[in-house]
Length: 86
Image 1: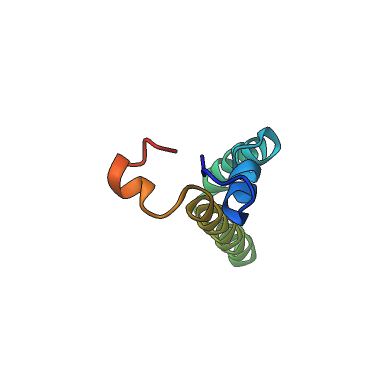
Image 2: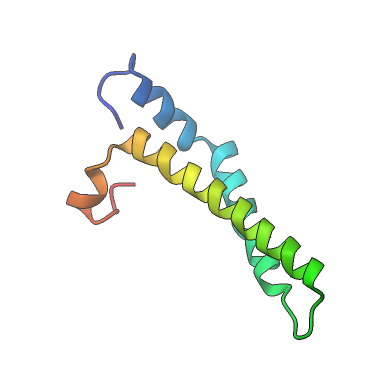
């Protein structure tokens, strides 16, 4: 938790540890799992393209989550605590 409660980092920390944010990320993980399970042999090219674009969208969303958490927790927390500080 950031020490100074007036900083942008503290506000970002409050956001990323909030239950709505956590539940949204959990739902995205579940949806991504379903999308990853939707492949089958001899699938049409259009279906394959939809799955590919959905995976790109999920990758962007998870990257955005990562950036928000790096801002909130600081970049060095994972280096010195092995990620357990999150």
